[in-house]
Length: 516
Image (cartoon, rainbow, N blue to C red; front, top):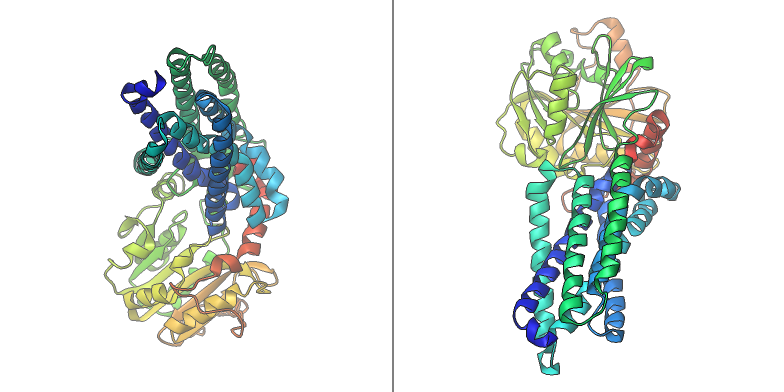
């Protein structure tokens, strides 16, 4: 009877089950980076970890599922889907504990172990669906090839649809935790439907009971999971004024009244800081950048890549009357800058990926401020010979490129040397300044131009000249590599920097901020 049913309605239901579980695999994998990125960053290491864990879990699911299905009489599929639902529901509840426990392992091992613990259980269960579906759909040995091909084709199509629906529709509208909770509820409903089929048409007594019991367990867990997601919003030391999950990370506006500070963060990067009392920027390196127009008088037009809180655009306009175009990839950052830091565009306010947008901009600009390299993940594609050459093409004949880069003064990983060598390939002249002399971990401002940069400009006061010269930094250019689109190991060179920065933020705000 079972085989006849599978030729019609039962087979269609089986394909729908495979389609939905295939979509679930990709939803969990893609959501994985949003759960881990606030702590470890959305780096190549995080993506490599998630992809590896997904492949490991699916391989294990195929193997265990194949063994299990050989020992059963076409039953157990509903139980597997129900277990996948419960493990999925556990992800947002356990994320905080797993990330904190894995932190001592470092960026690479920590990202892999946390991915393994959080996502492998549910993905393994979903991987077991395939072998069960193949056995249910195969009635004769000579039809096994067609059955296997059909099952995996439908599962793959489901993965494609799941990826597109998540990326194009769900991510911009719904938070990661809400999507995971919704997915787990959907899988529980699917498990109960499959259990009813198993009990009614396959003659399995009480097949629905395990799924119903797991469904009840999931319902009891749901308030705990939802409550845990919002249990760490504020502390006695700081308040979260705004929190928004965008396509690129968690964007937060945080106030710490005791220090008269308001911060703008994106995942594990602090991209803006201002005094609560007067609204002035509290990022030291911006004081250096604010003096650049005095080095080449008569600047009238600027471009900022990486808006942050928008303080630099305001400084350029108020101090020098410069009209500034801004380029920011994350609309949540742009909204936070306008809503909480009084940013008002004086030129074009472009929201989009910098590498794409700079190819469509029209110069010339007298000043380009490249400020995308904070403490978190390195957007390595924005610091290559090719990108810098594009930016030089947008500059006027006397224009200056100012690039802010976070690294160690001791250059433990040769990152500074690599950046300097790369800039040298695109520009004939460069000067480097350190934001806080005497500190190892620091902001470094590279000034690059087609002409020599005169620090003795008459537009600067003597004390400003002395202050600026005190921050001139000599980079060791004998180390490092040339960064290109073809070869760019910048993320690898900056692993120690990323780990250090994460610990600085956790020491300041507490770990809860990065693992919510």
